[in-house]
Structure formats: C-alpha cells, structure tokens
Length: 121
Image 1 (tube, one colour):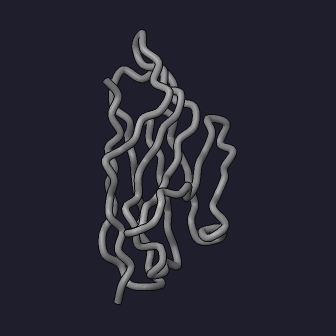
Image 2: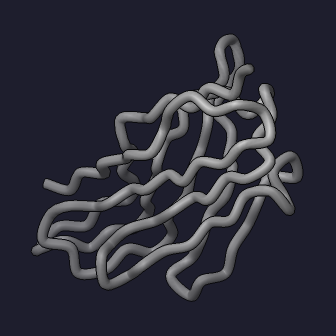
C-alpha cells in the first residue's frame, strides 16, 4: 500500500514563507510525476505545481515566481517552497503522485490527506 504524508502547513502572515513536504511510503520502485494541488473554500481543486521524474516543472500562473517545487527521488519526497504568500493562497494543499510502481503493483494516482495553509494577518 502506498501512502503520501504531507507536512509543513500552518498559519503565516502575508509576505511570509512556508515549505511543504510530502513523502511517499511503501515498497516504492519509481514515481513518475509528483505535484501539489490546492482547494480553497467554495472553489474547485486546482493544480499549483508539478514536477516530472526528469525534473521538468509546471506552475500555475498565479504562483509563478513565488513558489518552487522540487523533489528528492532517493527519498520519494516532493517539496513546495512558498514565498511572498498572499491571502488568496489560503487553501488545503494536497500532494499528488502519478504512475507509482511499488512491489508488484502499479498505482495510477495517489493523493495525500491535505495540509491547511492559512495566510492572514
């Protein structure tokens, strides 16, 4: 069984920074893409950033230049460094991993449980 465990959320003032981490557990052989999504109250879940196994990255326009996604393949971990945070970044942030090979099983997609980020003064 593969699980994604997130950490690093919390309350931060506008202009501040937070770093989210997400580690995949299980007998993992490889993970293709990893990413972060977010869902604000009353809104649909949206892609924030993703990173391929090759390290190619993709960002939502709203976070370009402020957020940086990275991954450590040896640790099966993805990070999201969030700088210059704005109140509109307030949301539950979900970790996502696609095309996981673990043991004898393939997992097309796995989600984390979510971590709350609140940007407020």
